[in-house]
Length: 268
Image 1 (cartoon, rainbow, N blue to C red):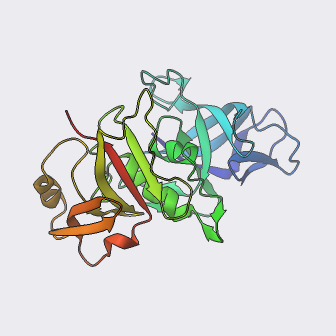
Image 2 (cartoon, one colour; image 1 turned 135 degrees about the vertical axis):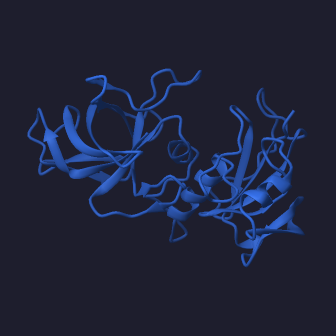
Image 3 (cartoon, rainbow, N blue to C red; image 1 turned 60 degrees about the vertical axis):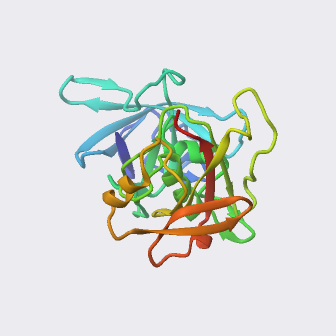
């Protein structure tokens, strides 16, 4: 899993690019912004902390968002001695691309700002999905940055209740999310893939995990979460309003301080 690239460490370029910069959701070349970033190889860091060269093979502006560009990337595999897409394909995205996002994430899912570094997030991963859902970390809402809301979304997308990087989701689970910033509201209209009568409240979320939980997404008992991160939660019924009620809440953190809530289809 590719974690980050050094925007100033250009290893190879076909267009004279000396560095790249992030503007909203797209990379621009430096010193001449008119140059193409495609064809540039930068120094990166893999998920295990080892250095890796990353090639930006193509740039594809998003058809539905002028602020966003998708990138076809490849990383050098020193064992196989070949370039390969570091993003894992799935049944819905056979050739995943990447989006450039500020900050870097560690194995626990925690985000931090590192000068000169940014993340190329795979199209089918939580970081990228949250951008596409509207939680763009480079934007503001009523004067407030959405960086923390985006981070809370990454916890929610993976059902990372304890904020330790462990996922409790299931592939293709239908999720309905809504927030206090006015970006997304609860979905009320039924569609081919969504039935509001079959969806129930799951949890409320902060950047470092859930603030309170009603049930798990994968159908496991809530006691398994209490065992996974002991002393983090306690059994306590909390009414958040709008029909959202929690069975356990975070110690020392008000559930109502959550940035994001979600409902989901229960485990079969």
